[in-house]
Image (cartoon, rainbow, N blue to C red; front, side, top):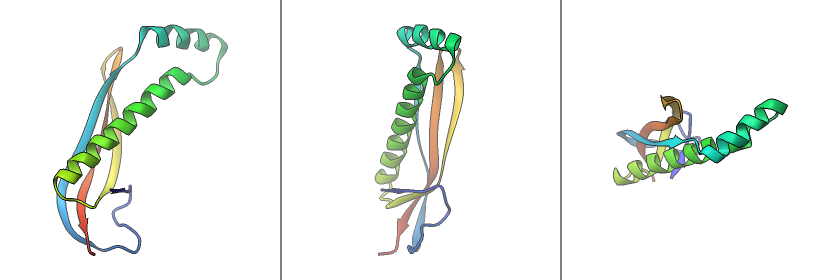
Length: 105
């Protein structure tokens, strides 16, 4: 599955647009990670615990979007975008979306 942020794929022609596809996940912070992150806030630097949490959430949202596209018979998703939103103080949603397309052979 080809995933691109652009509206076209270089050297490939789009035969058909199949529609909007999306994938999302909601992740909550872990109490242990919160404690370590709070300590790291005191001394500064990257909060790796949260960075890892968000990286995994983005990957899962993209995987779910790609699976949605496969169900439509797509070869690729163009115009891929990621959004985040806060659900509660301790949980956030990551949403991936784009347009599923079938490519010329």
